[in-house]
Length: 169
Image 1 (tube, one colour):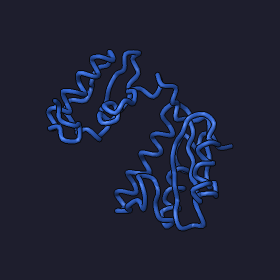
Image 2 (tube, helix red, strand yellow):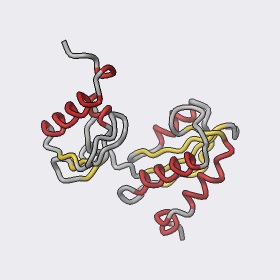
Image 3 (cartoon, one colour):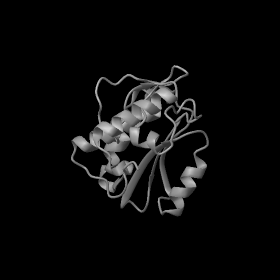
Image 4 (spheres, one colour):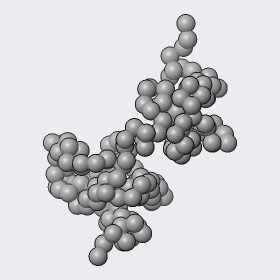
C-alpha cells in the first residue's frame, strides 16, 4: 500500500507530479524540482504557461487557470476596523468573494479593480507578497491577511503598478 502523500519522499512527489503532467498532456518547464508546495512552470496541453503547485495538482486541482476559466482578473484590498488588511485576487464578479470577507469582518473595500489584463492581478499580488516578505512582515492569518500597518505599502505597490496607472484617467 502506498504511503500517504504527506509521508512521501521528495523523489516520490516529483515522480508523481511528472506522471500526472504526462497524463494531462502538460510539459514541465521548470529545470529543477522546487518542492511540492512551490509553483512550477508548466505548459498545459492547450499551450498556456502556468504555475501550478504540485501539491495542489496531487489534491485534484487542475494545472491551468486559463483552461479552468479562472481569469484572475480582479484585484481587491479589504480591511476591518483597521486591525487587519487582506488583499487578494479572484475571477469575474468579485462580489461573492467580497461578501465572504465581509462576513469575516473585513467590510471596508479599500481598492477594487476588475477586468484587469491577463496576469496583472496575479503579478501585483506576487509583488505585494514579495515586498512584505522583504520588509519582514508576517501574515497574521493565512497568506494574505496582514496587520493594518502594511496598508500604505500595499496601496503604494498597487497604485504605482504600470497596469493600474495605465487604467486610471
